[in-house]
Image (cartoon, rainbow, N blue to C red; front, side):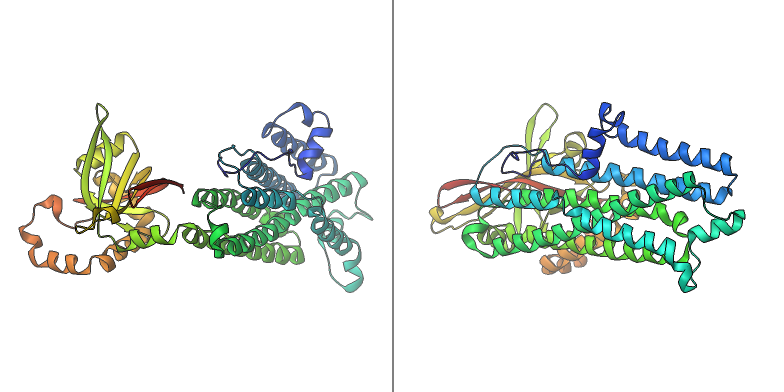
Length: 429
């Protein structure tokens, strides 16, 4: 992971991790084994209650789904935490250091427990007081179905413990989203200031986005709680509302980061990319020989795309080794000292190198590829118009036939080398 600026001065931990480190046998195991042990604990506890009290199978299945949700969420949030705190030292700037440390301090602050406690208090209060308002809750249903005067203590303890664990995770995820939103707005303010903007690279923002995707998947694992929510109509509505709100906020948050990624690219560099029509693409042939060809390209604000023949040497090279480079420059014939160029190195992705892989990619990424086609059409409208007048006379490799003869190659930037007035600069994106 390369968040790019510093090694955090301390090991940041969520409360769940601290609990695991202080309780045997969890402290003897590493993640995700200790998390799996928690899942087994809940499962066998629930299985024992199922046989002891002969409760209906539907309640056992619902409890098992709740335990599975705890397992998936915990794996996700632990992985999310690791991706943030295990950074590598690359370059240290005071602004970047202050930003990263501030984000980590807020993210792992003990106040994250407040939301969880509030949610748990509300749910428990609902369990024990809702009947007074004519609302039949989960505990009432099982008590009525089993003809019990009261819920057995061991079963009640299981329900309360499982409820607290669920509320802790739901509250923590909501708190994380709030911290992420604050982080994004703070980063947006930095990028509006030219001096501060130079302290952040697009690589940092892209990696923040990757970590947010991990948290997004942890939230999505909450759908495994649906069977548990179905046991109580009120809790089911609350769960569905929570999932809709958190998934919606996380999606907006990630989209905001994608916008900030483009803003972090230096204005002059972005202008050069937008205005230039042609580029040179370099790949590595068998035997480690360089292979360079001219090409048309588009940039969607994050990645570069080129279109080429499925049978081209570029495709063969990239199918073997995904490293790629693309060079873009604005040539001044009258004064070569004013030339500006940028070399982008990164990793590639081929959207189909034969008929079968082409069909599969178009089925999965059809909308994405159609969007790229529209970018090409917008940038090279005159070229495409002329193409349709003569396309029947062109070799098949040059014809714009998706899957059959042409494919898209996506280039994910890792480093930018900028040439300006005979001066070379390295820009980490």
